[in-house]
Amino acid sequence: MLKTMGFLNKLLTRFFDVSKRLFELPLETKESYTVKNNVGYTPIGQERLDKLDLIDYKEAFNFPAAVKTTSDDQLPSTIKENMQATEKFTRTCHDVGGQVLRSLAAALCLDSEYFVNAHSYDKKSSSIFRLLHYPSVPDSVNSATTIRAGSHSDYGTITLLFQQLPSNSCEEMASGLQVLIKGSWHDVPAKKGCIVVNIADLLSFWTEGRLCSAVHRVILPEDDLKSLSRYTIAFFIHPNDEYIILPTPSPLPAPFPAKKDNDGNLVASFGPSPFTYNQNGKEYLWRRLNSTYTSATY
Ligand SMILES: O=C(O)CCC(=O)C(=O)O
Ligand SMILES: [Fe+2]
Image (cartoon, rainbow, N blue to C red):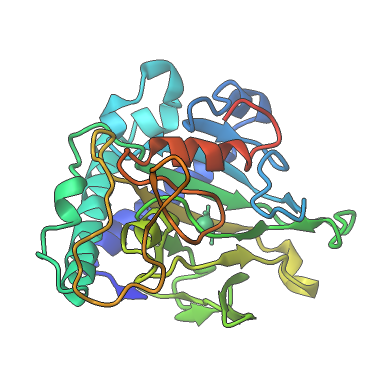
């Protein structure tokens, strides 16, 4: 968890308000922005993050991190009207992500710019910022087949996750977000002024398992908490599209060193889905997205 600075907190308050207004639009309006190429609206039940086939009881809007590059017909007016703040927010997230990547590079005894050089705000990338809404859960929802967000690890380099607290006076609250550590689930509470940072799969491959991606989920609330809706914002950081991923030259021992497959390709020796080095991360990302959505529109 990372403590944020005052100006980011102000932007966040504004942003959660924008998000709330966006999700309050009629379903018909939201569905006119149906997700395409990982940009746009995903209605409740369309995404299944967990391979066990649980339905995700949530809705989401995805936008490119370089939000100005979004085509006009993919931008709801609620975002257009707040474009300046949106750009400021995404640039700030990109910069905060850069600082995290510098620390991680230093911890692996790499040049501190090693990862940052692969992530430019102005170059084309798959970095996405995502507004999420978990509606209140009606009694009719079957908790044996439904979750708020199924167990998964994120696909890119790192993710910054902002969780909204139910009121200004609340400092900390279990929000349903959980992380898997050594086979048991642990709560990751929403904390005032704090960002959750997830290591994602591409960074695990890149570092040959020296950094481990975080398996996480969001469980359904119980009893009277069912009536509370939940809002979060995720900023998924991915390398520039043109960047070719090779194992880092870190001198620290690698738990899962890259190996050659039968065709002579350099491949990862671990992970939820095969990964081939010496190419950009896009093929891997699309393969993962493909298995996440129940329809082929993502
Ligand atoms: O909303 C959350 O707390 C988690 C969302 C998430 O893990 C995701 O969208 O990848
Ligand atoms: Fe996630």
